[in-house]
Amino acid sequence: MMNFRVLTLGVLLILLITACSAPTSTTPATAPTAAPAPDTQPTFQQVTLAMSYIPNIQFAPYYVAAAKGYYAAEGIDVTFDYNFENDVLQRAATWPTSGVAFATTSGTSVLLARQQGLPVKTVMTLYQRFPIAFFAKSNVPLASVNDLRGQTIGIPGRFGESFYALLAALYAGGMSEADVTVQEIGFTQSAAVMEDKVPVATGYAMNEPVQLRGQGVEVNVLLAADVFNLAANGIAVSEALIAQNPELVRKFVRASLRGLADTLANPDEAFDLSLQFIPEAQLGDLALQRQVLQESLPFWQNELTAQYGLGYTDGQLWMRTEEFMRSAGLLSAPVDVQQAFTNEFVPGGSY
Image (cartoon, rainbow, N blue to C red; front, side, top):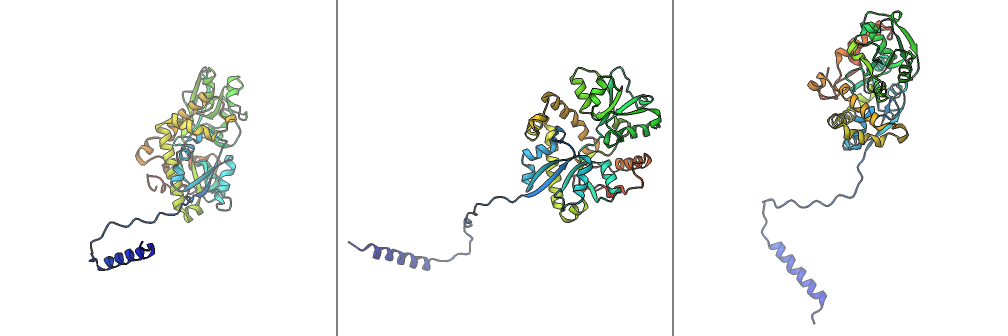
């Protein structure tokens, strides 16, 4: 029997001679199959979004963007960090030291922060209409701003969006605080109106009035935006982040706007996805929370977003807001409005 080793060497020699004598060709052959890449985990950039309230359905667009992988598709891993309005901008302004790249905040807060020397800028507007409302039982007329004259109006305190909405309404109506009675009632607006402690109160249009209706109370509502609209909530970042990593800002805004678009298109899906981000103890009445989301939708879009795209910031509105805030004494000096926001990261382009 022929030795197996000799046979093998003979076969190899024949193959070698055949390969060397074969004609060459310049016609490209099928591209060789690349060696499979080693298994690697995708690298994500860790960012923190400081949110100006507790986990809440009002943040649905951001929850949807996270749940549907839109941030991940941009290479971003977002941590939601819940705070309060007077803290988020300070943290965003000191990026990267603070670790907070993005913050949810209002345009009024950005203007106040810039006057204080904080280099922050709004890069995306969520609320196109200021979300505060005046509300009362149906026996109290609230057809126009003139109906506020002579009324006792309950507000949480002389701070924040509810207070600014009151001052803006008085400003638009040619009134001062002397024309109304302002009563500080803390965050008890719904109960205060229901129990007739105050005839009128301020609150979020998609919250307190919805709560009262859910309890069978008929209410009249006067939207602050219908009296005097103000620059409202969106996403703000530091000027340093824009200068050093504009692509990160662009990716974050793009993913967030995808979440917003999906929320507007399918609020039921958005509600269900958002529940995984809100602790069960804070959910409360699910039917009520679903209605809160439904009534938020009109505040996130208007004729400008139809023209320029979701997230657009209205420069004219910001200028009117700055003028009002100076008139009301909220700003002690002019603020350069065009440095306080940018549209370069949203579909509408620059201001």
